[in-house]
Structures are given as structure tokens and as C-alpha cells.
Image 1 (tube, helix red, strand yellow):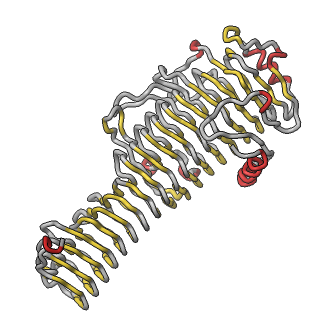
Image 2: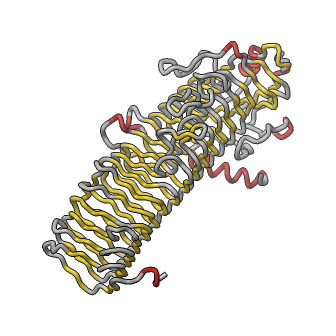
Length: 527
């Protein structure tokens, strides 16, 4: 942890960027470190510190301290901090007040008798540990064990949960989330550990409600440097919200996706930064942004960058229907995925279904990139991945893939792509079968194949350019061009083949020029 001056500088940069009304100076650990002692407590504004013991709290874990703590909160003035010294405080529910902060060295604990079941019709409990409604400018840093929400805030602004530790009820099969924001703005959860809200998932087909952080119809939300693990459903669930930053979190062993973004009023979902997170052993996707239900593509202006994911998409060693490593994108546009790494995940690393404009640069994975349905413009540059796979219903205006390292390209028959461009890629395994409506540009690539069908088959295209490629093929013809491939130009390629270099079925308008070829080469001798 750096010096106070270094810390204040970093916090000021964050607060300025998010236009906070007032500055909080607080030491944040990456994953919810140990609670500070009273002597180390931050100074929050110019207010005084109020000790709950002075209002009758006992902190023995037996007596209900709710009323004493509430009296302390209600007595506080603007900028005051209510402090709970070491001890265990049995608490039902505390109502927060604007401009009054709560910091605890002790443990707050709810009785099991307060537990209520989560339901879609009732998404908040009658007894959260902390309740905030239509208030602003509150800082909360506590340790708590709760049976309902640790905090439920509605129509609030500038609420900060920092350096806290929340533990839920792992036996509850229908748990409320630990943190619930509804219609809130400029609020944040930072440096906090949240675990065991909801029962562990036991089946690949079903899961249990219980999310670490749930954000509904809110804006200006920051979720940073938290440790979110072993919850029944998602680590982070965002619904109908905008201007959201999810950065630097460790999210693992949750019963659904690590991070999920869902839509209702689709036009509100915009401006997302999902960056530098570590997403491991979640039972569904690492990042899931799903707008399938609306039937129209929504531009969301999202950046998914610098994340690391590992072994998502299984329960007790069995694969679930989900598990993308970099991201699942459905019905969205304006998304950039950059510098992510994903290994050992169950499903394709990047799954794109029915999207608009998507950009993927410099991602590394041992998984596939899979395209489904209609898209507009997909641009991929500098990625390393195992397989490019298009499903039979795939169609798009542009698919442009450059400077990638790809094991295999799988293009089914009958796809429709106005412009398919493979440029300067390393492709480890052929053949590439091109049977599509649209134009195909294959330039500057290195393609290796040991397949009976050769390296590159042009069955059907409206036009094709094969220019400056290095093609190495061990068997039969390296390149095959059918009569239904129109407007084909094969120019300045370097081809080494175990058979003839080209099998030409005399398509109309084919042009072959300046290629350097080696035919009938004994590949065993070459090795």
C-alpha cells in the first residue's frame, strides 16, 4: 500500500473523472483486506466521530443493538461518522441518513430469523442490513454477516461501499444479493469482499439466486478492486443501467456468469468499461451481454479489455451450456474487445450473435471465435485463437481478420458475407472451404494444410483475390477453384504442394499471374 500522498492523488483522479460531489480519502485494498483499527480510520469531511457505545450499543453478539446504532445515526450531523468499535453487533436493519458515514471495526450480524426468500416479483427484502432511500453522500466501511442484503439503496446518489467484507447465507437457495442498487447514480463498491450469498450450484441445468452485486436502472456506477466469490448466481449483474465501470475485480466460483449485462429498456444500456478483471471457475460465461429478446441491435459503447479468464462454464467438472472466456455478445453493437486472455473455458472464447459493429484486437485464447446470425461489421486484428467458426445461418456486411494466429477457419456452405477479408494471418491447418455469396479477399497469409482436400477451396464467390500468400500443402492440389467461383484473381503467391499446385475447373474470368510454385514435393524430405 503506498503513501498517503500517493493514495490521495489516485483518489482525486478517480473522483474528478466521475464528477463526485465531494472527495473521499480512503485506503482501499484490492480484495477486501483486514478492517482498520480506530486509530487508522480516515477523516471523512470535517464532522465528528460518534461511538455507538455512547448510545447504548453493547456488541456482545447476544443483545440486539439495532436501536442503539440507529440512535447514533439519527443523532449525527452533516459529515459525521458513526463508529462501531470491536465486537459483534446483532442487528436487524439500519436506516442510513444523508451525509452520515458508518465505519466499523466490529462485526455486524443479522439473525437467521430475518431471512426472506428472493423472488422475481420481490427483488428486495423487508430487512436489509442497511437501507438507503433518497439519500446522498454516504460512505460505508464495515464487516457484516447477513441473511438478506448487506445494503439496499434506492434513488440514491454518491453512495460508497469501500473496504468492506460481506458474508451471506450459503444455505439459502433463494438469496437476495449482497449489494442492491436501484435507480441510483454516482455510486460505487470498491475494495470489498462478498461471498456466499446463495447456495452453491450443484447442477449444470439449474442454479440458485444469490448475486454479489446487483445494479438495476442506475447510472454512474463503479465496481472496482473487489473480491466476489462463491455466490449462488452472478458475481456482478447489471440491468438497464448506463455509465458503468467494472475494473480490477477478482470474480470466481459463482453459479452463473462472472459479469452479466441484461436489457429491458434497451436504449438505456450504454457506456460500459469492463477492464482488468480476473474471472475464474464461474459456472457460465466470463462476461455475458445479452440483448436477444428485443429483436433489434443496440449500440452500447462498451470496452472489454485486459481481462483474464480461466475454466468458466462447468459445475463439479461437468460442462454447463455456457462458458465463454472473453465474452458472449448478443444483439449489441459498438463493442471493442482488446487485450483479453482466456484459457480452458467451456464454450467459444468469443461468441457473437446478431450484432452490429464489433472490434476484437490483440486477444489471446485457446478457444474459438464463433459467429452466429446476422452482423454488420466485425473487425479482428492481432488475435490468437484456435478456430474461427461460422454457423450455417451466419451472414454479414463485413468480416475483416488481420494479423492473427489461427489454428483453423471453418466456413460452412451457403453463408452470405458481402466482404470476407483474411489478411496477413498465420493459419495452421487447412483446408479453408469458401462457398459463399459475396467477395473474398485472401492476401498476405501463411496457410498450412495436410488435408486430402488441399489448402484452399474456392467453390462459390462473387469475386476473389488471392494475393501474396504463402501456402504449404502436403497432399493433392493446394488450391482448387470450381466453376461457380466468379472473378477469381490468383497473383504473386508462393505455393509448395505435395501434388499439383492448382486444380482449375475453368471458372469464368479467372486470372493467374506471377505465382511461384513447387509441385509434387516430397514432404518427408522437406522435413
